[in-house]
Length: 402
Image 1 (cartoon, rainbow, N blue to C red):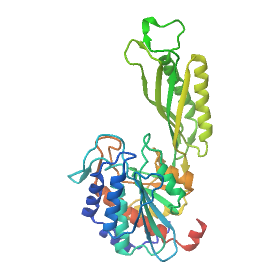
Image 2: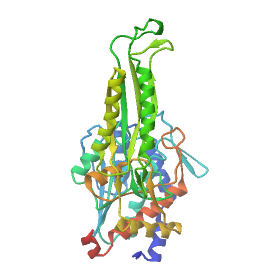
Image 3: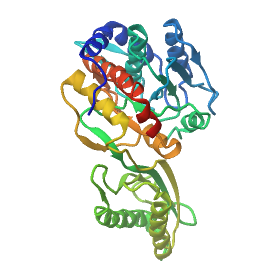
Image 4: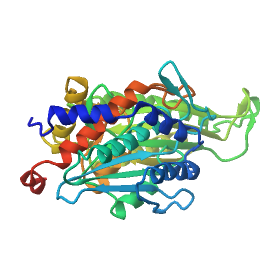
């Protein structure tokens, strides 16, 4: 890899990341509750912070007037690539935990996922401006609502992409720090409703041959277990394997009642891009066969969260990131998989741009114990700024070829 960043510039950027300013920004975002579809107040908070810093802020509605998105364009007057910093401001629907800073760690709702990472983006943007390190191209910062499923459906991100708020590559600060994910699985959340005619009834009063929705649900779990075994042969060297998982089953109101409905929820993940329709067809065939043999009705809501993707290991964003990580941490990262679906899957599938996920080594995402060390936020802010410098100042012939 050719590193276009001098050691002097690396040290300058590292010195200019302000630990206290970064912490204050993260706490200011965390202190505003923002469950998915209700991130308007925290978007206003982020916009105010950026405006106070002297940045020009755009607020596109992007198909979600309840919480207009936050956009900042930081550009130079020289041609080059545009690196996008993108993050979601919404959090999962759990009880709100206010921010607190103890012993070098930051706690609170969104600390891990991903208000801490967005604060690191903001700090990287400040450092790029203050050091004049970015001499070509530019950085596009976007932040939005509607990420976390099943409450959100990414409508705001899709609207931003459709409106042209995209760079040549995008960084996302999800809590993944131990590998460089150049491939990831697609994922759908499924909810199946198995039902029968009639009313709920005491178990001893059931008519003969009455369909049993709970037994059908159990049979569906067994058939999906068989599917899981066959899916293990569908592999990708970095993304892993296809999978199906059932995490929730619900039926009845009391132990001795024969219910009329059984609901199963879970996930279906796949490693091969552009196979969503085939995946859905395979799943629906299992349900159709089971409905026929069990004399029940089975309906499914198969909500795709993102398609599978892969990034070339030779892409310029990979080179720029690895150089930045080497400069900050003293090593490059091994190529690996992205175990979850994030907004990078949408950027890859819809916008066709490489999307790289790297964030702080945080813990407790989707729990009440979210935690990230301030040192990790500082590290990723340095990596983000240096990645932008290396990516945006790349040679013109590289730019034209990308």
